[in-house]
Image 1 (tube, one colour):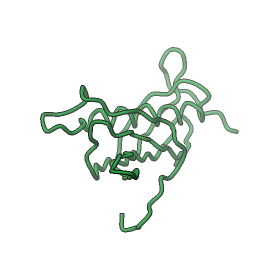
Image 2: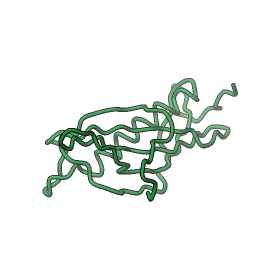
Image 3: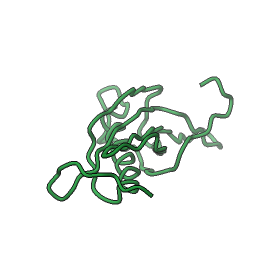
Image 4: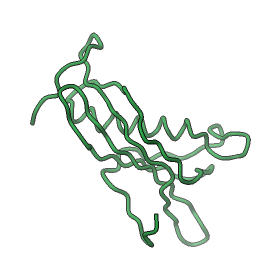
Length: 131
């Protein structure tokens, strides 16, 4: 993160406010809450590729760079990284929009790679349609 003006990669999938109910005893937002927002965003991106239901099968390479605070707006960006026979790999970045004085600060707070599998109505793996 040495870039002076880093930009999010991918498409904005989820934007939500961090609320007091989502904090740990230190007053920071639980990492699990951030992870769940990333899972929702990744699932949305994979759903669009799979043209239907998907399920999370792996969470890889999670990195928590900075804490998320109450009142921050969490923005999760997705980028499809790979498509297999039944699986879809999605890279995710979570950015926090922070209000500081008269300007807004946006910081990369978490990133990771999630793998989803396309499933049918019975929850069994199915082929990912080819475009």
